[in-house]
Length: 153
Image (tube, rainbow, N blue to C red):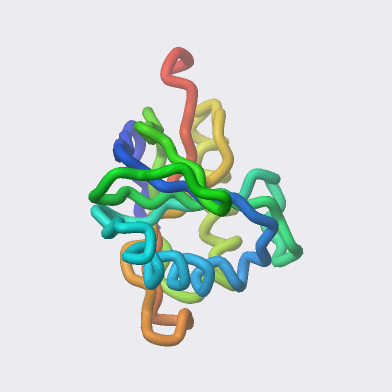
């Protein structure tokens, strides 16, 4: 597995969605949001980013946040929030190819790499959807990022 330290993620004009979601259902929620952006007068303008707020790698229902960079003016909505800028700096990244259900092994390996290299993690894992796959199965691709303290290098 390849690990790349000192990366930054930057996105702007984002619509956000927060909910309690099972890890196995997150891609279905993302697809639903993507399919309905036009109803809000918006179009996706980048890769979807999501995180689980608790540091729990099981498939229990967890508090999740989804960030979607969009084209268009984000109007106030009952169901969605907005964020001008999303920035994750000095992150360590690895790639996961496969189902979301087995991403916990990749995340655990990334955390072990961070520990062995004496980086100080300061965020939960953030996932960037590279390829959603046809059935949300083994053909999915994610980049997994964990932000680290840039002052402890």
